[in-house]
Length: 439
Image (cartoon, rainbow, N blue to C red; front, side, top):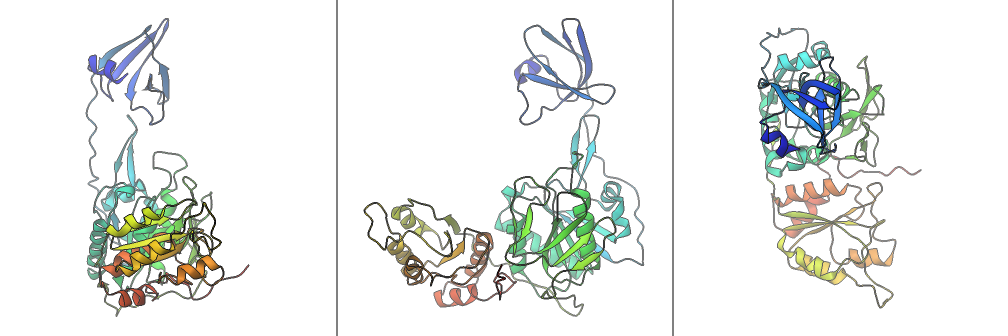
């Protein structure tokens, strides 16, 4: 289909006619949906509806009118500051949460200026005065520790300029990694730093972008929390959002709007919508304190890997991890790896290989691949054998992703094994819970 359109010099946005026997359609050629039939055309009719037309040898396509290039023009509206409201900063770091739709072709453009945001989300004006800018337009799966550093530095700039809170618009797939990284990099926060995203893009009727951004801005402007948090839908309707601690949150569903959940702790708060009321669910968080001066601590060593333990994992594979400066193992159950304590003829222990890594100066950290729950290497023999190797993480209830990010941050500060263990077992940003709820 693409080669046929190219031969006729027809492009997306052009007005075309499609004739199939006695049936004729005329309209704007639209982009094909990602999983759509590659032999079909999508046309926007004059009445605004889109139709799909299956192409075969009897179908005739004709160019009627060349389409005009669609360009995004930032709004020129002047936004007046309301002296009775706090000023917050909104930083764009990718994702689809804030965008404007050009309805002629369905093209989606990012919206980052204060005026653009207020045009897309008028409710923001009732929450706070907005300062906004784009850091980068990036798919979250392409995010790297270098991007985390840029975000952290820019957050510090916004706080030092007087913002009463900072909102970061971010893609959802790796938002929990970024939240953990910022939690370690931004020390002595005096205001909320809020990550928000959208599971459904702004051109879909079921988009969660409005509720998430308004709730996130409300937390940034009005809450007394001085932590890095994630604010996302609390259920599949538009009733409320949860405020999740930055090191204790994880995306647990591919597409549901309530995909983000607090792990091993309750959410910090709940924000109802549309009345934007904050209901605190915990009190063990750091509070706003204007006298505090935020410190940037962005030293990171990204030469760290995360490996999930699985049945049949080879000892040779563990040996191959020696090229890394640090290793996180997502262990099974309450803290187990293949150890073969019974001497089974098929089972292969990886205990000696883990010990060799540690003895060579490579810290090995463990985290529960069950996600929920706390590790305890004293329950089973395999766990006790693993503990004897010198792994770090016994009794921790961090997620594998938070453990990975923390090890990067710790290795950015020291290579001394004793200091690494001391820093990893110290809870800097609430990543290790003091207590585990039973039941």
